[in-house]
Image 1: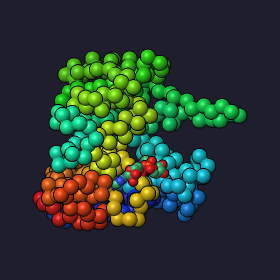
Image 2: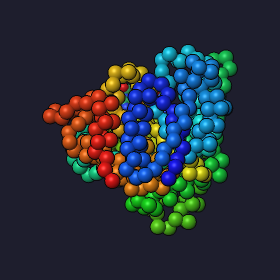
Image 3: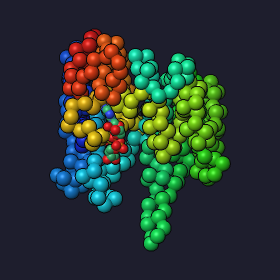
Image 4: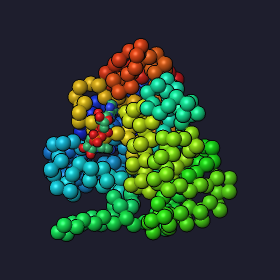
Length: 354
Ligand code: NAD
């Protein structure tokens, strides 16, 4: 199969981690007889430096025309003082909206080899942690009106029934393919948008009698993720709640550097990226963990290219690498062999077999 992948290396550790994922994808292509063509796209701080815009239309167009997009991360202190509309993160929001990817899917799973890296007590970890947060990605407060007048600032949180229904369906469909438990997270004791959210989710539940729907307030969910994470199978929530909860969830697995994500809309063209940022504190030092990006590439093969065997092969190679005792600095523990970002990519590539 021939696939065109738009590649956004971005800023900070972005270029280093994306390079490792491309290494692994090239090995997949070689083993399985595919051709992956890469189109470089500038986005984020590097695009501000080059064009004065974090995502020029021409760059967005390359992404929309591709079969899928692989992204490292964007942003950094250098661009902190850039005005709002021109900040690196605006490029990311415009990319998500431009591609129409309204559903962000973040798995939270503890690799058995990394159980010790979790900050949670062993008895909690031993119960098993394996859930997915389905986050609405192109609506809500991040996309509402923002304004500051005098000493007052306003951000609008707005959702339509249609927006809630389409992400709700992704939640139910995802749960249907797993353990059939869907937890809808909102703040319906305070927010109108959350009361609408809850109403639509319960209306949808009638179409999915095989899925058990439960409701949870977002503040309780934040507590339950650390107290009893094994209760969750699929969590579906709005944009900002999902942003915060998924970062919390990533930490209980040990390192933010391990977690991939997929963002999909109506077409098969998806956006795949690790959940962390550009980590300027460790950029250029060859110590970043590229596994979140490598696993994002695996998700791309699984969800956008319909290549489940190839995706399994990447995940098995990551597992073999961990079994062999290799660790980047963020997940290093006693008795393991510490490796850098590049070596990690080389090793995972070497463990990749058909
Ligand atoms: P961050 O995720 O970049 O870093 C948080 C901490 O985790 C840092 O200590 C960092 O060193 C560590 N870390 C992150 N990824 C790692 C990896 N792969 N391996 C090892 N350690 C890793 O979050 P931040 O520091 O709040 O943000 C830095 C910049 O990234 C900001 O400009 C922010 O706006 C941007 N950002 C971008 C995205 C994105 O591109 N999707 C997401 C979040 C933040």
